[in-house]
Length: 186
Image 1: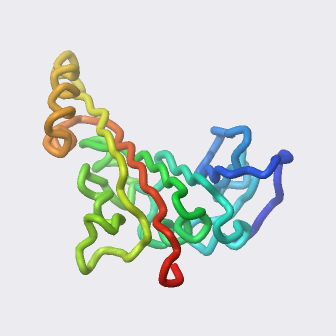
Image 2: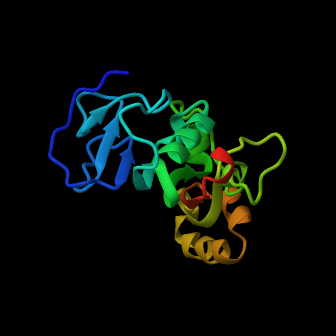
C-alpha cells in the first residue's frame, strides 16, 4: 500500500470517503487507489487499511465503489474495524441492466445483496461482519422507449423494491448499515 499523504488539513475527521475519485468531501478523509484523484490518502481498499486507526470513524461511505471489488467481504471487515460502535456504513451501488453489463463491475448487486453483510439476515455461508442492515432504498428507472414509464416503476419500487430493481434499466441502491458493539472481541 502506498500513501502519498494528505492534500488538506483535517480537524479530527470522522468520515472516511472511499473511492472518492474527483469527488472531494471537505471534513472527510478521502481515499482512492488512483494517485491523480482528489484523495487525501492513496491506497487500495482491498488491502488492509493500515493508515486508519481502529474505532476512529463514525461514518464510512462508498458510492459506486463496491461493485468494482471482487471480494467485498474484506472491505466490510475493514470498515467494521475502523468504525466506532454504532457507526454507519453507507453504500451506493448501481442497479439494473446497465450495472450488470458494465465490464469493469466485478459484481452486479441486487436489492437483496446487502443482506449478505448483515447479522440480522446472515446465512451460515455469508461473511461474518458485525453490521445490522438498518436502511436501503432503490431508485430505479427505465430506458429507451419505456423511459416515460419510469415514474410508475419508482412507485412500484416503494411497495416491491426487489421486484422493481430486477426489472429496471438502471438505478441506484442506497444501503445503510450500523456497526454493532464490540462484545466478544469484534
